[in-house]
Image 1 (cartoon, one colour):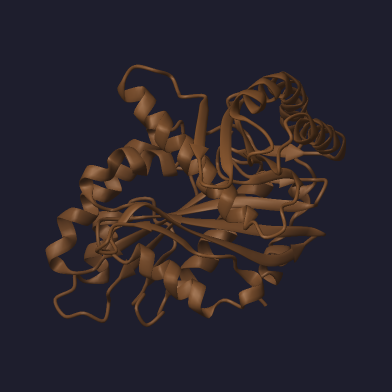
Image 2 (tube, rainbow over the protein chains, first blue to last red):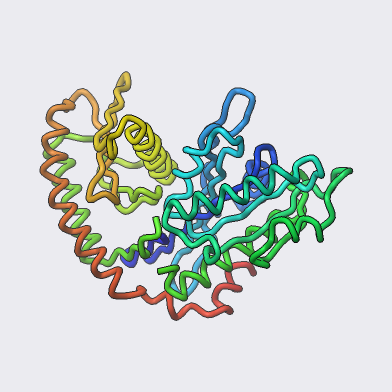
Length: 197
Length: 157
């Protein structure tokens, strides 16, 4: 649910980074935070455990400039990826306008990716969304590591909707902004169409 | 939720501000914020300088969401009021019209009893304005339907 403040002429949208534990969701946000112009980004908040695993969410507000006299603000959230934090993931999906599914390309994480994608679909349905219509972008992260699945394999396993997909290495930033740009575009196009009602 | 987009227009925004200003004075509060449950700040009054209002809105929404999850676990719909007591300042959070969160920050010049009383009075008025805002949102798109692909592309230049 986007929020349009006609009085201050602002459009606010919520984007959630979803995916299995340790796939690089927080790393995506950290890279965006590091590379964005300080005037265009707010403070990054991480509600994490002492070992820096996301406990509830990370939050990064971005302000990308104006279109048609509206300031555009995007609130980026990550979910905790570990399986047992499902209740928190459901809460964070509330009011989401677009999702980046961050997959871990390593062969050993194939099952975890599939499980997380299924979990996303279930949780979206539970929040009243149609998982086949919500703006979604896939990111195949950790492409720099050895023993990764091929793009064709990842596509076949995860990209049934044939949505935009990007190879990434979030630690070095490869693919991070391409993914962000793609999801922002989808969210704004969706907003222009009048959302998913 | 899959509710429609919320479009806040000038008259409703001004109405929210007027209710918040009265609440600020009546409750002897320091700052009052109105946030939507998805974590976006709608309006604030009082001395908000020095507050990171964007982070505050997001964390308030997370706070309400998390305690709502706890409420569900014991068979409650939600805990509609939260109170956090600090050494100097305190924070009172309450759910308004199921979709908004009213955040009142106050110090020892006020009391939790007074804040609760004033919040209860303000809540009904805020809910009435929210109903108008939701009806207006459902009726219109707020001008964003005119966005073109070129407009969207211009954000990334």
